[in-house]
Image (cartoon, rainbow, N blue to C red; front, top):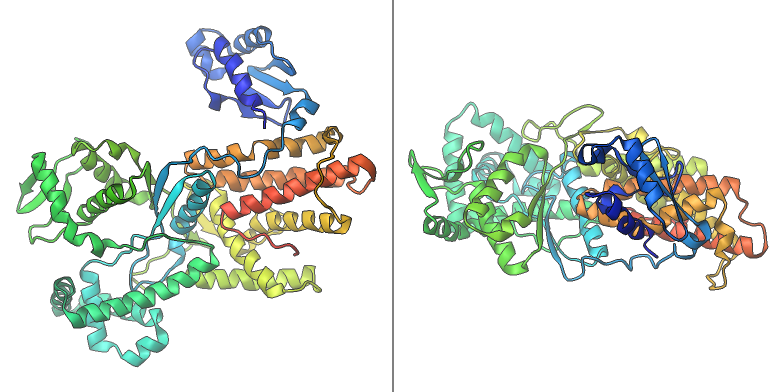
Length: 549
C-alpha cells in the first residue's frame, strides 16, 4: 500500500529532531497515527504539549491532517484515499530477501520425554521460522539435540542392570524415562553406578559398537516421539545435528583460542577469561572433558562456515542468559565480527495450573498428553456448539492443539507462563479458538453469498467507522509481521490477529453485509480480506484455519 506512515515521518523529522519511524504508532482513538511527544521534552527543552502544538502547526501534508492533543501529535488521513491504497497482496512484503537466518530451537534431549517445558522454545522458534520465511529470508531451523554427556552412560548402565529389550520396544520413551529416574535415585546411594556411567560414556565416545548401537536406539525412540509432536504443532527443522556432532570439532576452537592467546590454564582446567562482570568460560575440565560452551563455539563456527548466516538465533530459556553472554563474548574476543549477529531469544518458564516441572525426579507432564487433553476438551465444546459439523475429529485436533500454541504465543515471551486449559479453549476470549472461529464465520458468510473475487469494487463503501477500523488493521499487517521478526516476538502477530477479529466482529454486527448493490460487494471483499489475513497470520503462529467450526 501507499506508505502514509513514511510520508508522515519524512515531514516529522524536519520538525522533531531525533524522531524515529518507530515513534509513529497506529491509533484507533482520535486519529490514524500518533506520536507521543514526551520523549522530546528534554531534548527540545519544551513541554510535550508545546512540542505537539508547534509541530502540528508546522506540518502541511496533502490529505493528512495534523493536530495536537495532550502532548500527542495526531495524524488523520483522508479515509477514501487511505482505503484506496490499503489492500496490497498478502505476503508480497519481503524485506529480508537474500538474508539467511539460523534458528536453534526445541533442542530436545535424547532419552527424555518431550514435556510441557519444551513448549515455549518449540513454538517460539517454530513461529519465528515461519515469520522470517514469509518475509523472504532463507531460514535454517536447527534442532540442536542434547545427545552428549555422561548421563547417556548412566542410562546404558541402568538398561544393562534393569532393562529388557522387549519392554523397551513396547514402552519406548516411557521405559527410558523410568530407567533414567531409577538410575538417578539409585546413584545417590551407590557410587559404583557413577563409575559405570563414565565407562559406558567413554565407550560411546570411542565408538564401541555395542554402546553406540544402544545409544542410537535410544536416540531413534526419542526422535520418533518428538517428530509426532512436531507434526501436530506444524513445526519443521532443516537440521538435527546435536552436541555429539561437534565434540571432535572442539580442538579446532582451541587452536583459534590459542592463536589469540586467550586459552588459559586454571587448576588443570582450560578457561577463557572474560569481562569483570562474568565468570570465565570453562572450555575443558581438568580431566580433559570438553564443556557445553566449547561445543557451542564449535557449532557457531560450523553454522557460520556452512550457512553464512546474517543472524543466528538461540531460542532458549532466560535462565541460560549467562551462558550465551559468555558464548558471544568469547567469539567477540576471537575477533569474529559476526558475533554481533548472534542473539539469545530468551523466554520465561512454563507451568501447568501453577505446578512447575522437573524431569529428573519423574514429575513430568508430556506435551503430547497436554495436547490430547486440549483436543478432547475441544471435541466436547464443538459437539455442543455444532453437533452437525462434519469432520469433528479433524477440527477438534486443529482447535485443541491450536489453543495450546496460541496461549503460549499470546503474551510476551519473557513473561512466565501458567497454562490453564479452560482459559486457552475459551471461544469468546483472546484465544486461538476465537481467532479460528472468526475465520470460519468469515468463510461462512462468503460461502452463503456465493462470493467470487472481482476487480470492480467501490472501496469508498468501506468508509463507515466500523469498516474503516478493519481496513486500517489489515493495511499494516505486513508491518506487524516484520515487527515480530525484528523483536523476535511472535506475540505481536497473535495480538494483531485478535484485534482484527474484535474489530471485524464489531463491523459484522454494525454494518449489514448482505445489503445488496456495490456496498454488499465492498463489504464481502473486506470480509474475504479478513479471512485471508487471518488464515495467513494463523499459519505464521503454527495454527490451522478450519473452514467450519
